[in-house]
Amino acid sequence: MLLKEIIDIIESVAPRRQQEGWDNSGLQVGDSNRDIHSVLLSVDVSEAVVAEAIRVGCDLIVSHHPLLFHGLKHVTGSTPQERCVAAAILHDIAIYSSHTSMDKALRGVSGRMAVELGLKDIRILVPDAGDAQVGLGVIGMLPQPMLWSGWLRHVQQVFGADYVRYTEPTKPTIQCVALCGGAGAEFLPNAIEAGADTYLSADMKYHDMQAAAGQIMAVDIDHWVSEHFTRDIFAELLQGKVDVRVAETDASPIHVL
Image 1 (cartoon, helix red, strand yellow):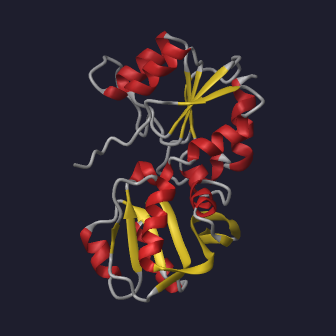
Image 2 (cartoon, rainbow, N blue to C red; image 1 turned 120 degrees about the horizontal axis):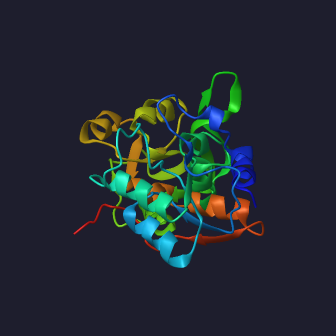
C-alpha cells in the first residue's frame, strides 16, 4: 500500500485535525507517496524500536507518541531523537504517529481501555465543543458493581500493571468508571462532576490525588501501560491490508523495584 493510504485508514478513526494544538501527530519521517510492505507498531519511537524495524525489515513505524514534538535544528546524533531520525532516513523507514488525535477518538485510546475493562454505555468524559463523539477521557459502567479491592485487582490484571496507586475508596463498591489514557490528572474534577465512583489515569502527582481524596477513588498506573492497547487499535485497522507486527522492544522506560 502507499503510505498515504495507510495514513487515511488511521485518520478515518483519528483525524489529525482533532489533535490538541500543542501536539505533533502525523507523518514524522518519510514520503507519503512511497510503497509500504511491512509496519512495526509501538507506543514510543525509541532507538531500540528503530533498530528492531531495521532488523526485521519493516519500512514503516506507526507509533502513538510522536518522535518529534519540536523542530530539530540539527541532526548530529547528539540526542536519541536525532539518532532515530538519522537511522530511519538512512534505512528508508517512514515514521507516522497518532497521538492526541487517537486520544480524542471514541474508538481510540481511552475507549479501548474501557472496552478492555468491560465497561458498557461508554461516552466521552470531556467532549470537544459541539461534538460529543470527540474529546478526552471516557466514562462508562461496569455490568455489575465490584468491590473496590476487586476493581483494583481487575485493573492490574487487564493492563499487566507492575503497580497500582490509589486513594481511599469513597464507597465499598465500584460501578461507574471514568478514565483517561496517559497523563489525565487534569480531568479528575470532570470525573467527580460526572458522578464516577473511580477515576483511572496515569502520571497523577501527590497533590492531584490529595485533592481527590474523599471525593472519588483516584487510581494511577504507568503511562505506557495505560496506552499500550493503542498498538492493538493500529493492528486491527491495518490487518489484512499490509504486514503488521508489534514491536517487541517497545516497553515502558520506567522500571519498578
